[in-house]
Image (cartoon, rainbow, N blue to C red; front, side, top):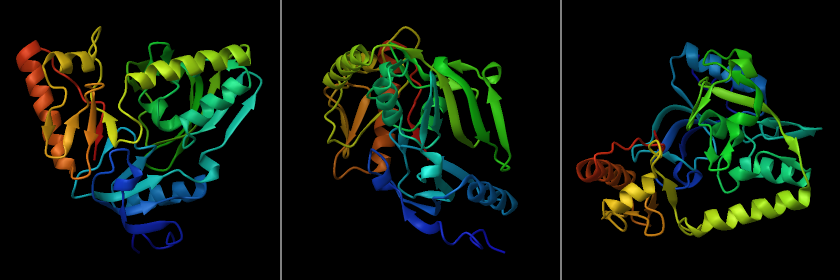
Length: 292
């Protein structure tokens, strides 16, 4: 039996990944799966465990850099409707792990539910946002979560209640293989006022970030009480290039991948930024960019 036996309908070999990421860089996945149900996903995860095939889950890929040589093992994407639906019941919102965070925000604002709107402009999926506890100055997603359904690396499905969930800056206790769905308890508010607040936050956020048509990614976590972008700027690195990778002139915590860029260029630029900031300012920057 091979890893693909019985899964040929939704697993492909040597699938290009670059165009699925915001940076548009990197090589292919050895295996790439888009399961249509939780049952298919669980069966595939169990098979990969039996065959000792490493498994990774790809969300919105806004904070992902795939190396030039690609990814060995199985990459799973939760794009099926079974993983992307959003349901609203009173003040409770249930979202699939593969649902777009932007969709969840717009739906809750439309229904007059406050809580998620400070996250406007943050890309990615609900699962990815919860795993990394995405947030802004107005709060983070973890403070509203009351339950999560997860799948372990052995294919077991578990419920995580609020008392089981721990959230901190850009991290959470949700470190299982997959967040299948999550439930949030939000607060009622006036939809018109919510929309105005959301639009205002969107305008402010976009004004300070690289233009949306560029291939970009935010790279470092903000050290406690400091801004990574400001530190990189103070180190004199805005506009610095390595090959086709450049530190953004608009926001120094973003790296732009130009047409000729490679993943190796980005990795070399990250190393340069980190060493220069330590050397000049004495601060060790930690990456929030995930590198496969």
